[in-house]
Image: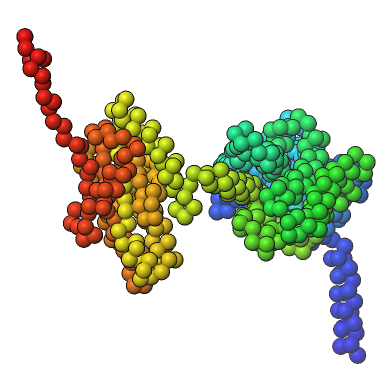
Amino acid sequence: MSYLLTRLFLAFLCVASGLVWASEPAPMRNIVLSDSNPSFDVKSELRSWIDPTGIATIEEAVSDPARFDSAPASLGRELTGDNALWIKLRVLRVEGNTDAWTLNVPIPAIDSVRLFQKEAGGTGKWSVQTAGDTWPQSAWARRGFYADFDLSFNTAGAQDVYLQIRDFHRLNIPIRIANKQTREFHRLVETLLMGLMVGGLLSVAALSLIRYKEHRNPTDLRASVYGLLILLSVAQFSGINSATLWSSLPQLGNYASSILPLFAVGVSLLFVRDLYALSTQYHRYDAFLAATGWGTLAWIASFLVLDRVTADSIGSAIIFFASTVGLAAAVLSWRGGSPIWAWMLLAYVPQYLGVIRLVLQTLGLVPTLWEARYYTAFAVALSVPSLVYALSKLTHDRAEVKNRAEHLPTQDALTGLLTLEKFSTHLQEAYSRAIESREPIALVMVRVVNHEHIRNTLGDPVAEQSLLRAVVKLHRVLRDVDPAGRVDTAQFALLLESVPTRQVLTERMVQLIASGLIPLPGLTPPVTLQFHVACVLLHENPVPPESALGELEEVLDDMSPHTHRPIRFLEAVPTQAGILQAEELAP
């Protein structure tokens, strides 16, 4: 009986004492600051309280410690714009450590962040440091991309500090603590990385503007506008704009965080329509893409009539939807065989993954990583050079087609070299310069001697391929300014400028002949090209243009197919002294 009474008494004691323990909050864990860990993220559980009115003072917040609940640091907090989140931290600087320490919240787009600490002297008063989008930079504790505060240690032992955070949507609050020296290095690296990214985007936008000035292509102008909008969006997302452009206009910067991404995504979809003509293969999707782009831009007007929370929430959903539409357009360009499909996928896939990450993080489905904003900024910025390069590639391809069409009457259809008539015009001009200003110019005629043999033994396709390979080898001894023409089936004429002597010309022709002896790739049995060359230096032997090509052809005709002298020069016709009349010799 006594044993049973003892057991009942112990059970009652446990229940009673458990209720007492339950009424007291669990002791807080200290955040220890030491030399061995100069920089770290706060990962331990945090004590927090959401003030539903949003007007509680620091004295009211600390008056009731029991209202602070313990929760994981990565837990998302529901903020509405009217309430305020209070976070309580207990920091302890180990004995002997004299470093200055800092605390920062690496999220640029937060309406307000305030840090409260006890003042020195035991007065019981609280000092406050302020940062956030709704405050001008002049009111910030330290100017920068996001909230950055100094921690003060007025007495020995652990000290409590409080963060008050206000915003209008769900947030995951990362908190970083670092000593001052390490923090300065972090700020330097962040500034350098953001500067490189912004500078790169500005350069691409300026390049597109220069291309527009040169070519007057409206798409280049739209590319420049797109680049500038992405630049502003990345700078706003990273906190650069709030620290520079509108440092004294916090309300403008606060709304820019919601409006600029809508601008950038909408213009991006319209820019994609210029790059890839969806209407040729996917007419309905092209119309849908245009409607989505214009609809994204139109939603910006909703911030004038709707409350900020509603407009921003729907705007975030529109950005996700529009990004999906853009990614689908990139996939369709791949399926349609567009020459720029790879660049479109490079532009959209990384930023789409970044958008998905932000959405999942906001919903609390993935852990918060403040470093992910750097990836998102880089992924969005990557779309600008990718799409601008795709534009330049399309512009170059279209220019090539246009040039081919314009030069079609003056170029040989097979080889792309000048026709005989057009080459004769260049020859006449070269002859005039050689006579008038003694410019060193060489006229060369090259014949593929074994072309007919290749045709008879291997057929016409191989013979045509051999001619194309011969043209490739000719270009190796030509400069860009040297005209070349096809004057017969397997015969080519070249004008080589700045060739002063026979020796220089012979060395270049030896290279040509040697390259012809290399077997053509992909042909079995091996096929080589046998070149014969006839030359004349116009500044030494000014043969008239109307007879020069004919005389060089005669030189080639006189050469045996198996000659050991495949390079011949046209010699000047020897002159004889005239017979002087006797009367002319008389005194």
